[in-house]
Amino acid sequence: MDFFVTYHAADQRWAEGIGRWLEEAGYSVELQSWDYWARSSFILEMFAVSAIAESTIAVLSPDFLTDNLERPEWAAAYAQDPTGAAGILIPVRVRDCDVATLLPDTPFLDLVGLDDDAAAETLLAEIRERKRQG
Image (cartoon, rainbow, N blue to C red; front, side, top):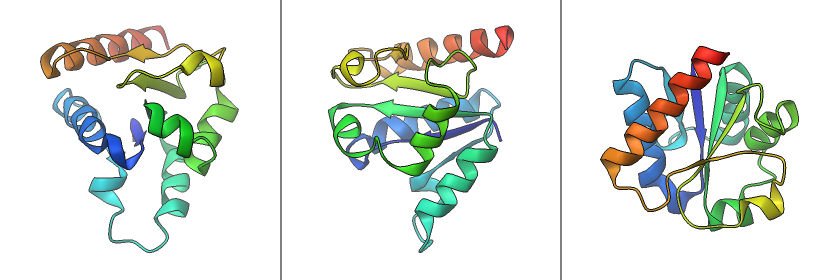
């Protein structure tokens, strides 16, 4: 699997858009709202899936930074790739928030203020570049 998308419930629309754009570009994607909503142990399953995904995309927002930083699927990706250099962790900021305070060494892809078309284009260009370099 290419990508696992982790997000806060407040950012579900963004997460599903990111998943859809990636799938339309030919990548395999898993995210909570598509794949785990009916399962009772979804947090353990999300952790397991994030371990086999080539990359974890973290959808960053004020809600995510407040409530999700200790969830196992995010923590595992961050522990393996705190600087994002290995492409295991791909933080994507979708709403204005102070990423540098909590993740000072982690570069992020910024989609804040972009419409859907521009956001999709920006995301896919960055993913293609990372895949080319990796």
